[in-house]
Amino acid sequence: MTQATPPKRLLVVFNPKSGQGSDLLRQFVMLAEGQGLSLEMRELTTRDPGEHLHDLQSYDALVAAGGDGTVSSVAYAARNTNIPILAVPVGTANLIAQNLALPTDALGLLEVVRVGHTLRVDLGELEVKGERAGFAMLAGAGADAAMIKESEDLKKRFGSMAYVISAMRQVNPKRTTFHVIADGEKREFEGIGVMIANMGMANYRMPITSDISPRDGRFTVILLTAGNILQLVPNLIDSLLVKFDLADPMFSGNLETFQASEVQVDAVEPFPMQYDGELHVETTPFTARILPGAVRFLTLERPTDIET
Image (cartoon, rainbow, N blue to C red):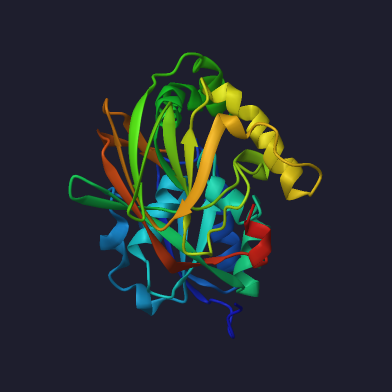
């Protein structure tokens, strides 16, 4: 979908804690203003950015500057408004921006705005003990949340490599029995975690697994049955081989995948949770439901380019 007129008035919501000193946003703002665009800057001061969007319809586009948690929370607050959203990647992993193949330089991002091309994508909605939050990439409980928790102290020193280092430390993750209800169908398995994926590419656009689309109105649910996270590396290789039609999967025993639009997850032992890299203060159980076509992201990509 392409806008008839490129955006001229931009509302910029930014997280001052993201970016570890990155000046990407500052450069973007300077270039945009230099080309005659009107920008309103609002600092994200609460976990819920909704209060910053009270006059959103007065703007042509919304810019969310921060990490994945910032981008997804802003997108969730702006859901179903039809306002195009640009993700400015100034966080650590920036997986949402990577899935959308967005440039990492200010001039490239400004070109995305100038072209005005958008893709309508799904969002996920997470409900835990009556509280709701949105996620664009994925939510999970178990080993992935433990990995993110351990990476927090490593980010300042190692950046995105903090996740790799943390994953390597997950040699003997906690296992438990998970109870999953997917679109009314009950499942039970023993493993190290559950991931609910809306977008399907990890760092460097490596596919987490095949057949993940943020435009099909369904999640891809990933049951982690492997002994530890490192054992899932062959599954990443499998996904690449399948994506390019080079070979059939060889390591499918490490995980199980299926699709669903609403998923309830519980565990015999309460497991930590994360969504789009943000640790949740609560633990399982939780419910995730898909919000079909809830947002329009600015990107130069085609629909098939953001699927695995």
